[in-house]
Length: 245
Image 1 (cartoon, rainbow, N blue to C red):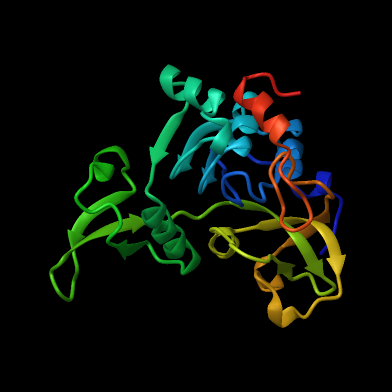
Image 2 (image 1 turned 120 degrees about the horizontal axis):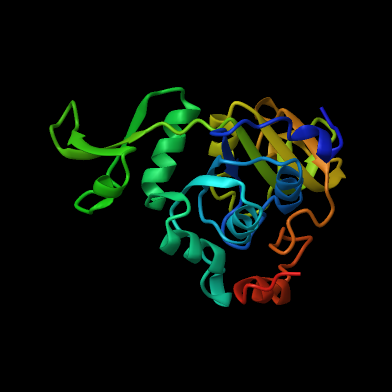
């Protein structure tokens, strides 16, 4: 299914879980997030594997009630000022994950399990600050493991360079957590730079996991979308200074 971006977000009630694809300054679905903010979505639970400009946009728009992430920054531009202010001011609930434990949680969601086991985070204070994690014993060996409760987003928003004629998403290089997000979410919307005649066998994310696509050239800016779009580092710098245009 292909539709206009404004038609794809749909109504999102308070407490809806929205997962954001990409990582750092790479392939953030910024056009989709702007549409979500413009539609008036508020009090969302946001999942951003490695957040940055996406989290800053959603915080500025007042969309976030709770944020799940393994880290939020603007990479070389420095700290994310709106995220820092929200944490220091306690204006949002923040659920801290390690990358490995968040992957395990999404894997559980993708497999429709209640939880998944991982060694990530063992021996740390993560279970004390993240109620989705619990140290336990492996049922077969008795060895200590971390049980990560499943995250099941209501909506996953992803951005990719190419979609083929059958609706499969193609991403060269690192997919980050996007494949897991697409499989774990109840609904997945993919924006893309170009439609191309590509071999479906080479797709990074099958159309089986995609509910809708929308053409959004430059839809990742100011983050990059390799190999078609470079990050707008000047705009990232303005965001870091708290003065985005």
